[in-house]
Image 1 (tube, rainbow, N blue to C red):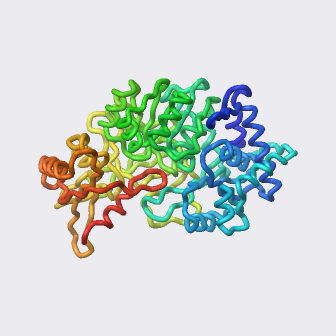
Image 2 (image 1 turned 90 degrees about the vertical axis):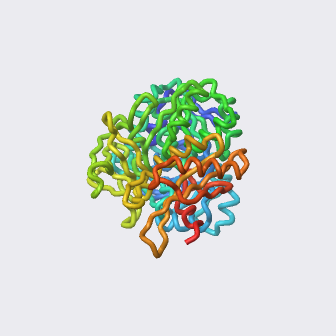
Image 3 (image 1 turned 90 degrees about the horizontal axis):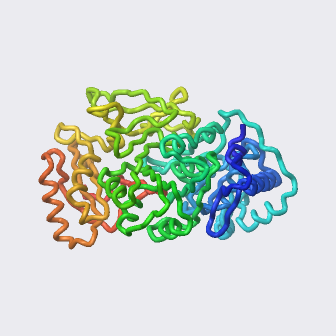
Length: 478
């Protein structure tokens, strides 16, 4: 099989990609893919080699990415905002033999392997031969993604050809998506969540995928929605909140998914009230690519998504109240680009277990997300679910803050874990917000109460939008 060939197999005259005013049907997408494959081959790239693509989302990105897979090579999609130092580390870690960058970045990087976008367009236009798609084993590597780095140095995650084969099943079976739909993700394609669930899934279904090179903000997303009227939308909780606050309309929407971080129940309720469309909460990682678990508003707990098998493993000392989950699914990655020993995430016999904690649902089958292992902490001898504390405080403070989070900390010379509340204020005066926050804290059980409140302008986040709690913890006095 060849994953790129699968993704170009939609009805020839159906629209595959939209970028701004440009529309590309599946026949043109296939031709673009082949021209890019020819240009990669002319550049000396051979099957099995790895190449970085660090471009904004768009048709150029799609052609280069799919062309590498067509040629049997392995693209690595990288955030174009990645620093030069991080990019060099990534190239060294992955063994990439070429880099496709925007013109200014290619000129300034000082790497002979770098190719500028203008030169690349000229190469693809000049390509005259039409290579056949390289036939690959379904377990052969197809592409790499790098983790967001929430637990340390980003890791290269190697994904197999087979990951693309079933990438559309969640959208088809849970969202009811088909060839008539328009997929749009506010998150960018260097992030596993939109790559799998919007780009791969949309093309596998023969649907239309909307690509936007601009960095997402409520105004940009609203303009794209107004112009292209997506029916299936993917985003993260932080942007859903900002879209709600901006009153963004989604006139053609019939399905929406939130992933990347835990979605507060109150946010899902507000979204449904605003749009008339329920917000499906999904759970996945860079290593799983596809969403392994999901929950609708009508469901009491997270359950396994189609094709996902789950094995539970009790966390020692939790008496069965906390578990790590082992996932089996066709999209599970082959492994990392280097040996990783510092992380709680683990591969094993074709399965993967992330560094996250789950609770068995009390009144039904399924699980409740309980955060990462560092979000389940013992305070004065009692287990505290940091996310549960956040949700309780958010219920009291949601009208006065744009965002909030609870951060555990431990001083170097003490064994005691303490909780701290961080908040990004809304329009409420700071004195009033601090008073209300302290009242909300006092309403919690004593062992769940944050001992301090910190108002900040914004939260530090990874390139994929995940909160860096560790950075906030470092800002606390010892």
